[in-house]
Length: 494
Image (cartoon, rainbow, N blue to C red; front, side, top):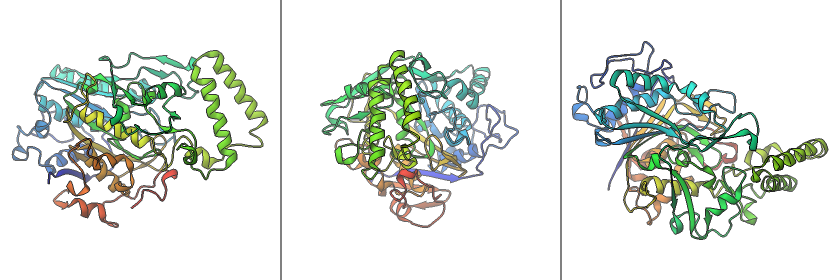
């Protein structure tokens, strides 16, 4: 049996907040002597996780230690993919319960640079939501300080890209036509990949799909019959090595968002991504449960009709008609009849019965593993991968956009995204066997190199668990006992 080691550890639940986020100790393998005056406990923990995974163990403690040397070779292109979904926390709380902290990226940049031996590229890139303010995000991230340090010290360029093709100008306002701006997008362009019959959407009778934007017809045009297309970043598909650095968070549509769900950020046009199907399960949808009140379902249906009829056109005239209709509703209907808070919470597929978003996640996993930069799918993986989940401050309850900060002080690392995600899911207090996003592992069409939980070797310090032992335990540290999104309560917990 081919085992997949995954290491996790716990430290002080605090980040280094002093750019460029140097380690607080001079480690012999690092090609610089600068250290931070503030503690950097996560840096030391990640270094320990490399060792627990057995990465270049023989040379640990020497100047030649190169833990990512088995993943990255000199001259290659390395892409770091953080979770950069938003530039704010919708709950008004800690932003870093939503996005990856830059100090974690800095540690990976250091070890990627060691493995490259100064030859190659390091790119930090993502596709945030349309309402993410990139400039605001970068002010919080301070990637410029990391870039400046690497350029002044080594004359090595750390690249950073917003891969979106458009964004909202003011996230406090609706994404109407006048509140949108075009962006340069991926400097390398995009690749259209058609999974066809190999898509998890193939054969579904219902095409009442809803994507990431108002124009459902664009989504449906790329998902019908034997056409199931995704618009993917060529920068990412051209990478020799993909370093995934997600946030440990709950998710309203798929239960948890880690490495796999984070792959929505490899798509330069997210309206190719099916998020849910209109209606309830009784009529082939998964937007809402059948049990929601009939009046609520009717109001939601009218709302989506208005989106289709007016906002999907992306014209100022249609936007104005829609806004007039909203004003009339607020004055004449809303005082007497309104959508309940419970329906608002689960609307848009934000519940455990969402049968679409996990399929999208599964399709993206196939593309990450087996898709090349020309759009061709292969039988064997196209790039090396390594994953580090940032759970120093995690996102609990109303994830992924308005979570409560959960100070776990945890990092989870390993080479296989599915293995790392399943270990992290269990650490959160959830049962990965209850999440459909892991279903592709049991299928024969694609060989991800991992099929069962028993093939995962969980390592933490000098304690080891077999996969079965770790995943079957019901009460034992260090499980964190997260609270799932309200639409998932009672459905995912161990």
